[in-house]
Image (cartoon, rainbow, N blue to C red; front, side):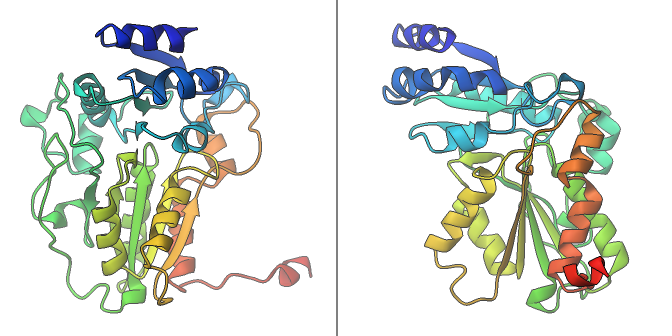
Length: 316
């Protein structure tokens, strides 16, 4: 009823924000399709508790929205990586009147100014987080980290996430197979950055680029093409089930011919095909295999820097 009511408000020229838990939007699926998407109405669907939610348990995890909404035409779908991006995306939804938007965001708290500057590379005026969001360009992601760290971009990231420099670090990534791109959508960007730092500390040859997709629909195809052109490995990371962001990226790479030559390895990291009982969010990320050491391990395995034992060897 809330989704249909919001559609009616949009028909009358209002700007409805329909705020529902990700898991409960499943109950309004028909309304999203028939009452909003088919009519291309500017309803702003704000999905709280996207991803794992800790002690609320399996009925409240927002694991499936990227998969069940990603197949619907006319939707613009975005997911913030931090509190600054959340503000920016709320402003983006508010200013977008050309169709329905979906903003999925997690349960939890922000990172704080210090971590945003040190890990994400933000250049915050007076060290303070902006109180007002800036609308983002629809369907455009951003590169957060080049080889050598976030500050190897040549300039800090502004509060709108913009930076055009492509500076790298030394002789890293001399071989294509040693160049890795981690493409994150949403909350796992911080863990991706930690993993990238750890990998480069462990191995002097591997060069890791980390990008924030921001949008699942529309995909930033220019960014994906750049990552596919410059790297031998692409890893997508998302806090959602199979059928979501990683599958959209893989579908595009396949249709675009990026996989035809066999010189690009691709791995999606998603929530497993299982229900998570009550636990802390960290414990659930551990069970899901989406913390920094899991991402680090995936990078090292694909770069063939570690030996992976055969199942038969483990059973001996």
